[in-house]
Length: 472
Ligand SMILES: Cc1cc2nc3c(=O)[nH]c(=O)nc-3n(C[C@H](O)[C@H](O)[C@H](O)COP(=O)(O)OP(=O)(O)OC[C@H]3O[C@@H](n4cnc5c(N)ncnc54)[C@H](O)[C@@H]3O)c2cc1C
View 1: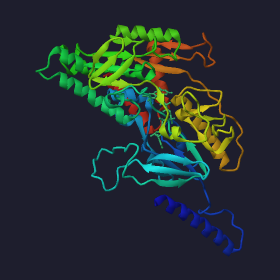
View 2: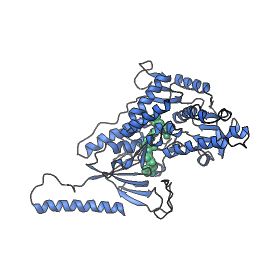
View 3: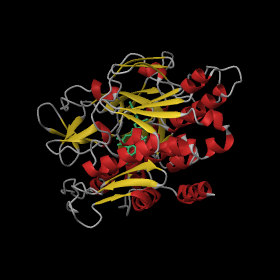
View 4: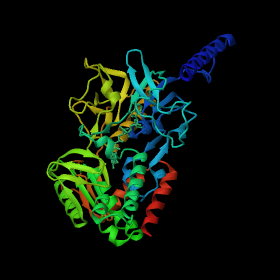
């Protein structure tokens, strides 16, 4: 097995170095290239895992990343890629950018033996003897033909994120699109265009066309709202240019939420502003609506009955990652099942003791008594904190400072070059300078925030280029 071979090679190197030092009989100035590096394993390549990978000292740590995704997803730009405002490549960064300095396995971690510090992983690639498909399909849990393998760690960072919540509503997993990954965005973009091409067939009735061009979104959080806004832009720009008016006038967007308001975490005035903007733009807001069931091309809504759709996007929050769910002996949040950490982000065990060798960051974690929202902002700040901590620890330097979150506010794009920006509750003060912003000004802030957060130089160039091309 590759992993055990590597471990034994590194042990051999260590022994060779030690014996060389002894044979030489003189004191060496350094311990040479074979010195034992502590094994740091990072689970996940999202905002938490990739953020840590970027900053960690790869010369001091023996870093291994395990993730089913060979790339990092820049999630705030996924809605833009799903409608073609941006190209897919602008929303990803490859993990292998850091190889060969690091080891990477495209795999799922299925089990963590916290006592013996061993991980059980399952390849996320198709078995080597399977027919190639060429689409780089990630194999979902559990690949029946896969061979599990084991990795030892000295220090472990769990950054496996969360899954999409479906509330076990029948038919959601089978018939809805999720928007968590660039692959989802690709499927959504294909489906939107397919709906228009299907609706354009000459033998369809207007009712059939209307049903195909009904785009439903369930979940009025920032992801659902931003997707509705981006889709609205697409329907009123490129689609309007390339399809007949008799077809485009039949297209409709409906946004459902069980709550009485969308964007529950935003300031009330910003919510109202968004609702007004949406109703002006013809997006149907169906709050206090309960979806009971989904079938192919049909939603069953308690308040409306059967609702036909051409495409359904589902975004109703987070469900725990199966790995997090399966971990035993660990303290978890009773509501969300996230792993509880202390303010140094160490995992807390059921007996209340912090596990000094394991940290948990991002959507999979919650700091005890100081819950923070499940956002990229929190995950990347936690990753930066761990970079500092681990880069000190590896050099035997103490790091005693607890994690502190610096809230930079929340932004959401609401379509037609408008956004909302909420900085209330960040210390800016309810009526402080720019504590709330709407419209074009907030849109400029939204674009500059995501441009600043874009990670690689390639994407720092590509993103504004695509934005510019869309204005033409
Ligand atoms: C469409 C969308 C838009 C968003 N927009 C914003 C925004 O504008 N601002 C904001 O602050 N937040 C935003 N968020 C939220 C933000 O993306 C998440 O909070 C953030 O991704 C959490 O980071 P994470 O590292 O915990 O998890 P993720 O980024 O989800 O990464 C988890 C990683 O773990 C891997 N993984 C999963 N299971 C395993 C396993 N068993 N073993 C190994 N690896 C595993 C996954 O493949 C992935 O690489 C958005 C989310 C979405 C979906």
